[in-house]
Image (cartoon, rainbow, N blue to C red; front, side, top):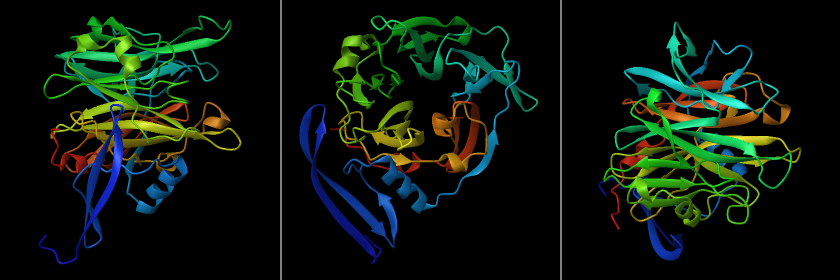
Length: 357
């Protein structure tokens, strides 16, 4: 190290990767007080309160707070949107559309016209919640949460993630239905053509909801059995809290950046959802600590579906910019869709030398 004020710290420990404990040494390098990451760092599990305190202490700058305007949907709300993506040469946003007093929603597709997002002509409407997208083998993959009558508990509802694919939105056809009771199922195509799989079981395996990860050799291996066998990422969530992956970014060095959410209840049963990120090495299974990237107060004031949902920011998508910033698209308070500009949270991971295992 050329800088005389450099401090090198070795952190020894063990980590559970794909069901097995392995030893690790993490190197932290501090240069004149500035932290430079050299490897993925995973410490003990952190609560929402601890993560919030860390975020507030960093004092990160945000800019360009905007509430997105949607028209052509009557009195219904549009929230839990995706980031814009290209379809037939046009930028499109998928959004959850529903009445303020209902949980029955459709996914609709919008294009921007004169500063407002309007329904795109000729598009399908999917009876789903919380849309997401990716691309695999040159095809668009569009998914969401399907809500249906519970097979056992009369009068109750159940949910599962479903995925459609096609060359364009008009060609979408259903190709996969996930396990009953699982939201936040995500896939992404890696540089070598293999598939990163994120799961989020609840109940006996996942409690209120924890993220699992597995690498599949191809999309043909995406089965309910594989999903149910996917190991959890250890020490990302305490038992009383929960979270999930919303969007997978394949970084230039082969790591994958996870945009997600982490959530908790307070003593009054109000929900608190925070947008967060972490990174995974898909070859070794190593992963980093969760970090918050925004909070509700960074967005513009707005309405809420219910009083217990005021402090909800549901990550929708992230558009990374060449200037080191990123636009974060999010659902706000289960009633609105907003965007802010933040420092690119994946840039520091992209500079790491990746261990190939």
